[in-house]
Length: 253
Image (cartoon, rainbow, N blue to C red; front, side, top):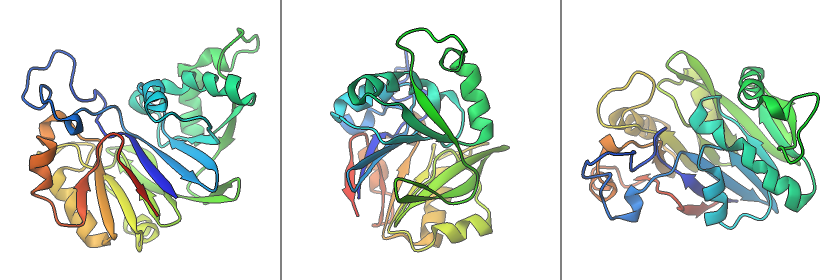
C-alpha cells in the first residue's frame, strides 16, 4: 500500500490569499499546503479520500492516471469542492466514478452539484455512481474500509482505517469506542490545526497526546494552518515517531 499526501493544509491553504505572515511568505516548499486530501494505492486500485478545491492540481502534480473511487469524510467545501473534476477520469477511463458517502454528505453533494443529479443532464458533466455508507465496514473491490466516527465540533465526520493505515481529518474529539478501531495502526494520520485551542479541530498538543495514547509506529499531522508555524521548526518539537506531513509526501506499508 502506498499513501500519498495530496494536500495537508487547512480550509484556506497556505499561503492564504493576501496574507503577509512569515509562514505564508516562506520559500520552503514544505510550508506550501494545498487543501487536505490523501491518495491510497493498493493492488492496482487508486482511492482518493476527499476532493477539495485543489483536486485538479493534486491529480496533475502526482500524474494520476486511474481512479477507482472517491470516499468522502464530510461535506465541508474544502473537502468536496473539486468533485466536478472527476469528469476528466470519466473521459479517460470511459466509466462512471464510484463515490462513497453518508446520506448526509450525499444530500450536500446534491445541493452543491445539482447539475450532476439533474434529470436533464448537460453534456460533459461529471458522471458518478453514489454508494451510501455509514459507520459500518464496507468494501470497494475487495479492499476493506473501516469507518471511524469522530466529531468536528457538532458535525459527525468519518475517518477511515484501511489495513494498518488510519486517516482522520477535521476532528476535535473521538469516543473511546471509536478509538478501539484505531489501535495497532502502523500509520496514523490526525488533524492538528494550530498550537492554540480551536472549537472544531485538535490543537497540536491534543493531537500529539492522542498519538502517544494510541501509539502507532508512525504518526503524521495534517490540516495545518499558517498559525502552526514553520514546518522545520515544529518538526523539532515533536516526538520521534510523529511528523508534520507535507504535500507530496509518500509512505508505504
